[in-house]
Image (cartoon, rainbow, N blue to C red; front, side, top):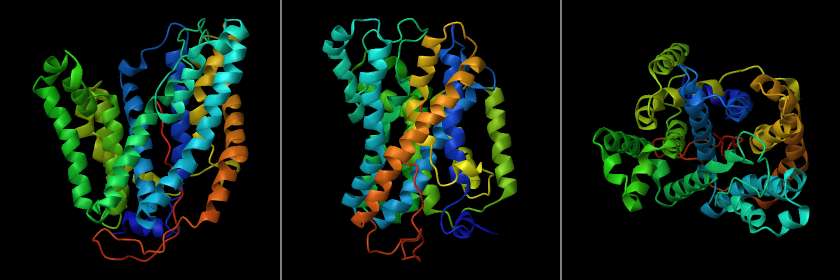
Length: 389
């Protein structure tokens, strides 16, 4: 039977479906946020069946990131890997945060401009660049149902932590041991479930280190870690995992059943939904999924992620009579795609072109799942940026 690795090799090591997945997930997250930001709000996190989209989109985004970054990690030295990641993530992020603080903020604050620019909260917002989260700007969007500027950025510190995990894997040779990678992800998920089942929440309710540890294994951020590590494992085992239409169909059926049964807790889903979601990600990524011609060779997904919520909030503020999520999306999505194009063509793509000058690709051979050298394949595009919800 053909494997996922065989299918990827047909496309020179990069599955054509990954581009589709990135755009689909980024736009899906924008749609998800439209309901939470709408006047009066919609509790989509507890809505029948639909609730699972919030968990699944975010999970697949991080699993996809782990899958694609694993290829780079096998080819690069640690220093080059970290430089590579930094050049992919920071330039566009820095521009978005600066525009939010000093353009959007000045335009939409209800404070006098001088007072806004002298307010410490304006400059505290800049810490989002380094993963210290601040979601509000002084006086901005206070007339909206939700006063945050860009809550999507809550995943930034988790993305940084995932890079720390990958760095540790590189230093200690874990990428040559896919079974160990699988065991680490499984252990993390099982510990989280055990903490929930045995009532550790009550013991952790007083705060401190106990609460911090409980949250790390059981709350929403835990899925990002499990997804990223299992994405790495899927890449390492790609020649052992079958590319099967039947397996894909069974995974979809199983995940649909979970959606009908839920809402379920994050800790439970980390155990039950992880493997099917990672398989769906890898299968679709390796498949020929139709894409609009305009999106070929243009990765607008990061820009959609970065500018999605701020532009949605702008539209709600500018057109307060437009309260339905669909109407809000009709106004916001064209502008979001426009800013995503700006980010890609003027910031991200030029940086990506410049980084090719630095010889990031290590002069070593790729290491296969069994630890033996494998034939070199072209470096896959990566999706090493965070998603949101």
